[in-house]
Amino acid sequence: MRFALVGNPSVGKSLIFNQLTGLGVEVSNYPGTTVELQRGNTCFQREMIELVDLPGIYSLEGDSDEESLVRRYLDQHETDAIIAVVNVTRLERNLYLLLQVAEYGLPMVVVLNMADEAIQQGLEIDPGPLRDLLGVDVILTAASQGKNIDRIIPAALAATRPSKVEVPYDHHVEAAIRSLGKMFGADRKESIQALLGFGDNPEFLEAARTIVDEIESRHRMTAAQIIAANRHNFARQLADLTIREETPLPRTDLDSILTRVIPGIPILLGILVGMLLLVFIAGSFLEELIVEFFEIFALQPFLALGLPPLAEALEHPSYSRSRQALG
Ligand SMILES: Nc1nc2c(ncn2[C@@H]2O[C@H](COP(=O)(O)OP(=O)(O)OP(=O)(O)O)[C@@H](O)[C@H]2O)c(=O)[nH]1
Ligand SMILES: [Mg+2]
Image (cartoon, rainbow, N blue to C red):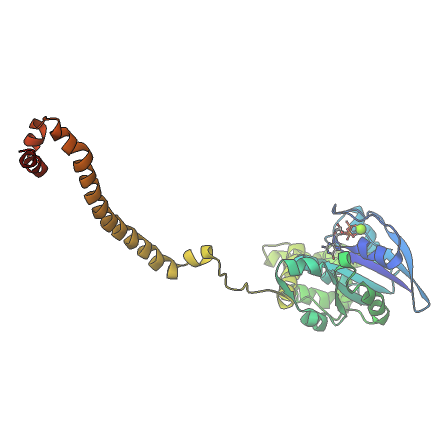
């Protein structure tokens, strides 16, 4: 038995490979760490299983060495099942590749890795709808904690069917797939590949090119762009069914209370009125105190020195009172 780990860069394929085989393939945060295929063995219920760690890729239709290597590997059906590893915190982007992989028609199991990060980010994951729509087993793992890694091999051994999922393409593309199927007996994946310009049969490619020209004359996009957009839309729909952002609990800290219109503005008005009242009440009380202080410690000693003209000029009542007192 041979299983191949396929997925985007930095989703944890090599970490899972290492945990299952006990080998030390390089694991790092830099995308493209695994640039060629790595092989290792693991034993499950006395059966020897070969695991292949394929390089991380974003698409199966590019020209890079990694993409060509994975495409060739899947084309040659060298594996009994695919273990499609996905970073669950970037599900939509990762499902784009997974939908392409599914078109190869190989038995498959899907590993939604990095569940620990998803939880930290407040994401709620329900693998159920994805399992139903893909028609294959979907396992939620956290490879950095070794969580659910032991479920991968049994699931891959039980995987006997390819995914039943089909991207709903634009109706012109769907019509092209049907025509190419009828004319050349090509399956869905071969027809899409031919529409994208991949294939060995020149006659088949020529027919596909004619259809592509026809499609492109009716759209403002190239056939490749239409196919990519359809895949992206479908990947988004699948991701939306699988992931839900947890509604954050209402915040009860002072900041969030005071920055809401209610009760923020009434509290602000209350504080302003309170400050005004404080200024009036405390102000008049302080005023009396200051005047009395001034009379006792400034005016009366001044009068006692027999220097009345200023006080007289000010006609201050305490001047007359002091003068009477002094006789
Ligand atoms: N938090 C968290 N980190 C993980 C998990 N799985 C893998 N990682 C980390 O993700 C980074 C990438 O892991 P790799 O195993 O090298 O990823 P890869 O898919 O082999 O990457 P390429 O070889 O570039 O395709 C490493 O730093 C891992 O430690 C996980 O479940 N949770
Ligand atoms: Mg790797």
